[in-house]
Length: 186
Image 1 (tube, one colour):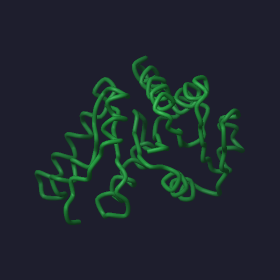
Image 2: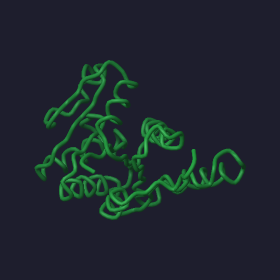
Image 3: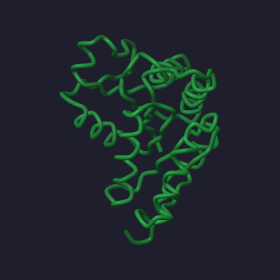
Image 4: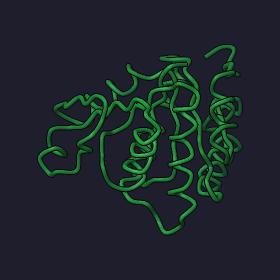
């Protein structure tokens, strides 16, 4: 695993644990020799993780739509930046550049990116690991919703096992590096 795509908020949230977790994941990526692939922003948890990787002398690849560059929300000091036309191109390029995916806390954009890549795993479009860094229980309700969907017959229970979940950055990276898909037939 040489690159991990991280989906996270363009805000930092109300708890300092979110900021600390983003920075810890950034440091863990560099320590493991893994490149960060992310949405290219300078604000929020996006900026926190990028800055942590850069401060530790790691590699950061940002993929950002032209509109967001024009709104001046792009990070200016990344190792590599790809400017794309739209969000669809952004998500595809981020997926193509990445060996695994992690979601930190975030809003609807983070959820949308997570669920798209998670759905692609369910459908067999990729077998790359998908993780949730469950900081301060942020993703507990999301996980409960997935269990509810499975209990109500709207998804297979083994699809829940596609998500690697923990609250510790190093543990999550270890889970991603040793991931074996729990899905035997799609």
